[in-house]
Figure 1 (cartoon, rainbow, N blue to C red):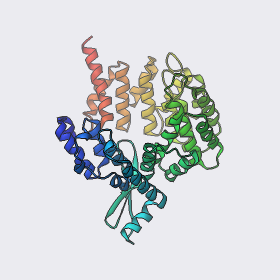
Figure 2 (cartoon, rainbow, N blue to C red; figure 1 turned 180 degrees about the vertical axis):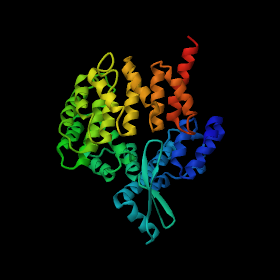
Figure 3 (tube, rainbow, N blue to C red; figure 1 turned 60 degrees about the vertical axis):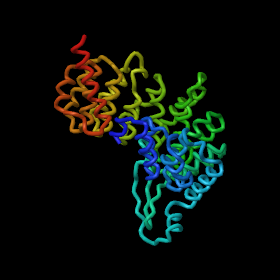
Figure 4 (tube, rainbow, N blue to C red; figure 1 turned 135 degrees about the vertical axis):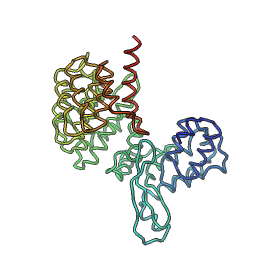
Length: 393
């Protein structure tokens, strides 16, 4: 894959895309498209029917087949067939449909796999047949292309089939779809879930509300005020840790003292996910011109948190806050000896952004980035950029 991308020869990329599709490797097909593969170069016989893509249960594969270069090749009848297949898989359930098709009574093999760079799905194997469980996302995509507008309630039930997996493409595609409607009726329906006794429904409602504001790029930004009011009040009442984490993330996407004031009481929360979202929520814009005294104290506490992800997140917030307080620089220097490599690298990154010489020796001791880790490359690149700035005033 890296060789193909590095060559960036259109013929190689196009051939690789066709092969990835035939092999049902949706993830690789998507990566090739991102790096310049022209799907339009693929001959019809080089690809697979849209219905086969729907059958696979891989949203990444299905969407690769609908890339703008080849989408027009599929007649509406093929899209309708794909929609009906996806609906059958989703409503029947992958295991039941697999057993119907294969007639096998063997034990079902199930594992979680990445479907693309962002989302993961469950993959099932039975009787020599392997299928992923992204049919709900495929169904939603096909319906959207056909101009079908489902009710909030129907889409909610579809998403909640994967309530235990927030990064599942069915859950994510539906929350994004509903948020994109940017209408009062959808907002009201999502807000009503705040008091639902089912934490999964509260989580779904919180994500739809958060994304409605986050994805609103209009000049009016009509949902900014209602969202801040909603999440400020919600943060003081929510008892489920997963839902509270989503509320903390939402508050962190707002600028101003009200959001910060709602974040601060949860800096010592017993759940690491909540503390991580609190640390992520602080930024140099929340209390101009840098961190407020309260935010600074919270970050100094969180950078010494028992959880490595929380420590790394707090370190990054301090790093990107560009607050010139030497106490914060010393706090980052203190975690250069952390037991977790990514925390150490985040400290190198932060010190480099603060033009602190201590990043140079620390980067040297850590050595080169681990192969394939873009995160490590990004942290160490900042140290190299600091050296370049230092040596070329």
